[in-house]
Image (cartoon, rainbow, N blue to C red):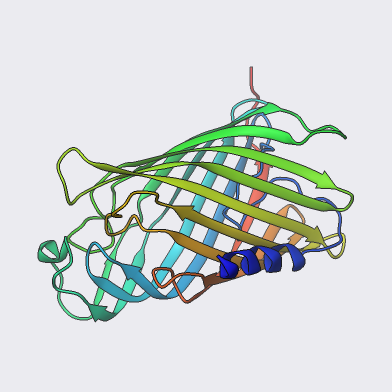
Length: 283
């Protein structure tokens, strides 16, 4: 618990005095309640590398590279957007195996590397309350993770997951603070007709240091309150720091990830770009 509180304090302290940042984007995972706007499209491309990644269902541990990570958001109205996220390729360089893991017998590859596509996540975000001087803006988001990565590669579970979250965002003087909390329902591949229900939460802060550049910080985690957690459904916690630079409608980003539990990556690095443009007219 002390480690968790320290992580939250660091995330807030790293971003401390700037112009307000609107919709949170890469390298953060915390959703901002603001939407991109009717008829607009947001495209994200990135490269992510994480060290000492744990995949307990497959019994694998190693260093994971995902390239490119892709995100598409489509503004279908002034208060709603559709989101599609995934990746074309991920590769795990294996450093450790646990042959007795629940899905270890299904693995079908040779050598010390395995690769696959990333699971696709499809969802939507709806802002139902706009921000005023006395209240935060609020939105509701839901998404489904589709089982595109196979359990034979060790990088997938062949199970669908579902998540919902309540999103709040407020600009306080020159700092943008955003909080998410919700429910994550994980399919359980180790039992028939079973699932795991987890609480998810995150807090992010964004602060501009110039007209084009921002520093950002984030704490994100999840909690499983079951007496016995299914492998892969344990508590998790991550701390992210990053920077963003916007020029001519394109935003470049770089980020550092630190895991807070033994089940999280020890460290990770990411970089990418975001482009938002007017694409169509909403009738």
